[in-house]
Image 1 (cartoon, helix red, strand yellow):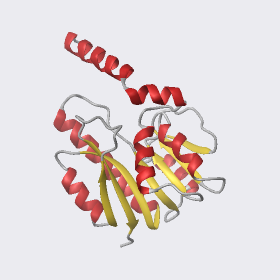
Image 2 (cartoon, one colour; image 1 turned 60 degrees about the vertical axis):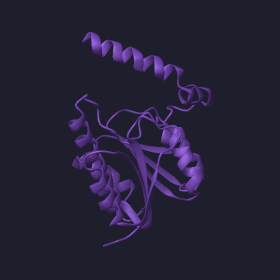
Image 3 (tube, helix red, strand yellow; image 1 turned 135 degrees about the horizontal axis):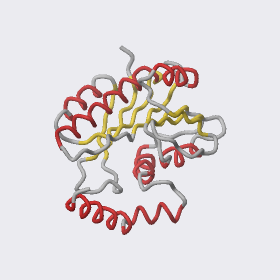
Image 4 (cartoon, one colour; image 1 turned 45 degrees about the vertical axis):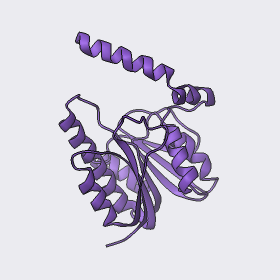
Length: 209
């Protein structure tokens, strides 16, 4: 690792450790600070309701699933998926793997057939290379994968929440989402660092073509 990278990593770690949301997540027993992003969106927009079937893409380490599952009640279902392993959570059905692979998709289809899901959540982000153009292209690609998945799985009228980094390709993606959902809103939760280009799209009322 270069000296510059070492200093940058040390600086990030120091900032992370002093972050109020990191400390609050630890205090409350949540797995990540990202939980507060979903919590704010849900408290404002009431996207999680009892009895829903929800799919959480890019779920590890599990903060969003940890927050969302209790909101769904005893008749709800939450299916989480990630290419990274995730420690089990009560009443969360977890699939380890990449949903672009046939075997993983088959498992997912068993748990969540087409037109059976009320809400698809995606907090997926690429591994950062440090090359801005490559990182932005990779993040848009993940958004497109999440959207394609949501369009196949959602019930008519279903909803989709996806992390989007503003930059090259983000406006085109937003336009694409707007073509398939009746309402699309942009949210910037307080737990999203202000200097980050990260926002969340909240798309509701999925329209079948």
